[in-house]
Length: 168
Picture 1 (cartoon, rainbow, N blue to C red):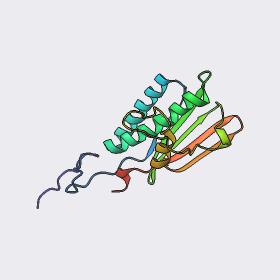
Picture 2: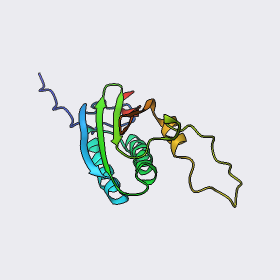
Picture 3: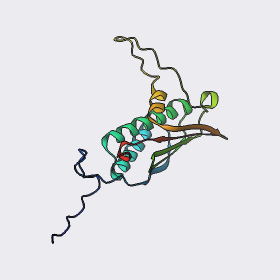
Picture 4: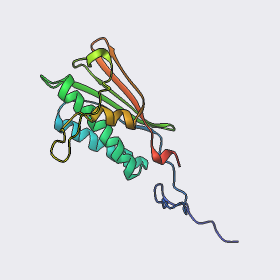
């Protein structure tokens, strides 16, 4: 009788299907309050990415989450707090159905009291590629259950990011 081999550490399995991979660890990844700003957003995104890496998410999911949260948090900096920095609350939790994200700020409300759904900007290659205008399309295409509401003096944006690592 041979002794069973020890289990492999989480996240060490090969993605080729020959070795089963451990599912990511579920639970709270980040919950915090910070003052809006470009550098603060970068620091928070780095902490979220670090937490998701420790939870066992793969590079593709990490890049997707970072892109979505960067777009949403940069919108808070550029639009909600265009005149002066203000408080932002971010909550990110890994659930069995994806990554649950919530952003709360006390800045200006979104126009028309809803998350924007603008037309894509016109691209006239190879000369004229617009600098902006893609953020909400990115967010809407890569998330589900996107909900915005103005609650008193606060903007509340919540969304779920589907994750490849959870669908295996």
